[in-house]
Length: 282
Image (tube, one colour):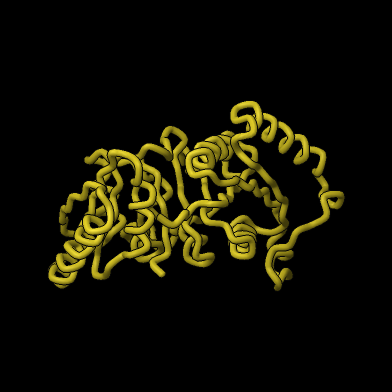
């Protein structure tokens, strides 16, 4: 099977949330034999962001105002990684200037990363140093983004949910099989249909199941629920079913329903209980 994870990019702001994300990235790196790369973004003013027409740029470390503080935080983080993992994990780090989303997108696209790993925000009242939209990154950089709550694991995932709509989600199936390989994992194909899409959803649901069964020994089950909103249906289903990972497409499958959801970018990755792997369909 083709190796899908080789280089993992982990944005860090040195908060507890991002440090937990680094720990989970180390677990993945050891399991999939890959390296991790830590990225810290120095924020700029909105006016400076508008002026940066060529995207985020690397800046000389000596020119950063709080360079001593950033250097100290990186040294502590790298020491902790070394203490916990020895030489089992190769770690690199980089500092960029700009906004978090654009810096991550630009850097990931130009350095051949296979996965971006982001720690999920833990509460509505939590102060946000690092504002990241995994939906936007997955769509614009065409790189899978995994959003993980601090209390969830990312290896030995025994229940993976993949929503199926009116097309065959080949990339989602590919990542699902890759992650499930080697464990007693069940892939749950969740057909999400309405009155108009019933025939197409059932067609692709059965086709997806056959594709997995014909190419792997992984256990597959199918289930159908009626809904006009994929994110809402998946969120409801996984709150009532044992789920270790959700694999979903950005934009069309992540937006929660309602006017305010559209206005404020309310996406399922912000508060889903299981980790979510957001994968561009093409």
